[in-house]
Length: 547
Image 1: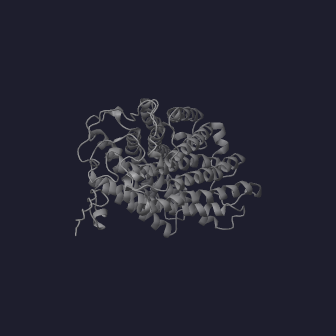
Image 2: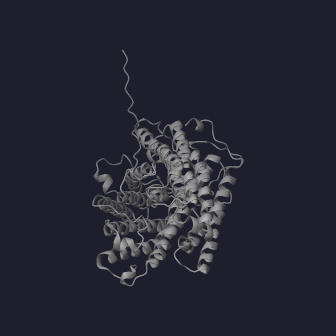
Image 3: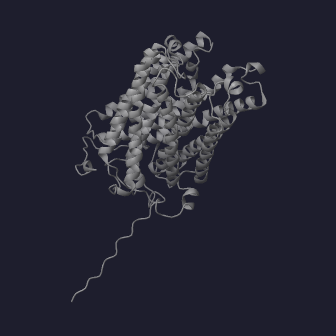
């Protein structure tokens, strides 16, 4: 009679997900990875909230009569859609989730420079959300997300002061995150990680952080002044009290146009990573792409006046702002050219992240080109405050930032959670989003050129066909966005276990475990090669393509 002794299974390595159990180990954690996951869950909730408001807007516009919502209710619905999506998704989305998770790992650090401040930034963000939702529940806001005076400071019937406080507080979350990134990138890079060995994702977040630190205090002060004027009749913007309403626009757009680059620059950093990884090539013109991020950050501070061509500013000022607007398009065009050049003669692998990356290039290019129309004074005067502006904004922000966010989330999902998602479902989602997005917003270019004003819930009957097409596209777009919210959580339990580097990509994040250990690396890595050091003629390995 023989007997065998069972060999105990090897203990799984400790990682940031399983190191502790219980809710306290999450809500009080200073681990940048756990904070990123908390941001992800919170922002996913806000996407659903903001998307719900968008659905109501499109349902209202399906018919010309304005028969679903009252005028006052419609004003509050589109305002809340804008406030939620801009301040609680578009601006924090990539930096708070992907940036928080990846910046330390990509430069070989154990954490961000100020872990406790990082946790504080999340709770400040949460307070801003709670105050905004309270304002919505107590009567809403009907000013539009721009809070234009003197309507917001005097005549609005909504909870403007409470919403202003919410936006003010939320701004500190961005400032704390930006400060953390700047110090971390300057002081905590691994040995050998020189500036020109950093991934372009890091360059993009560095440039974004500089914009955040320089511009966010301006809009914070501006919004506080609106609240003070509304509560105490301080004469800053309201002409009744000796104020100047155009001053508000100067102060607001001095922040809010750079804020466009706060939203899009991190997305561009994501796209650089995806294009290189799935083309198996070094990024074409790496130094030029890196400096183009800084150029966008700098020039972006000098174009705010193109939002104000119809406010009475001088023709000479308009010409200057128009020329600089054309100039700021150059660094963005450089990035698009370099991404396409990177793919040229590469071994392009059409994974879900790569599908989103290519969709980004197409949609962002349309958004950028239509921005030139709005930066030209003669055309802008005709199309100002029409649906042409709505379409342009969404092509840049939703077609750009949101598409890149989904692409980056799919790319790094195996690294974040150690599981693969169903690849075919991902490709289907990317295709549905691309088709639905163009169905939704391209008709709005035509509507805007024909003169349909934004922020109205009724319109002439001859515009109904285009609006119906837009509403149908929005339905398709919503399905495309909901699919990842189903199969990504599903993959956490049922997905295939991911290896360290399922894509065969370059970068320090692919040299640590999936999910990463608590302190990212067992020992401090030493960087000995350039970023994206793929050998000439590199090809994806057959075993990688079965992922």
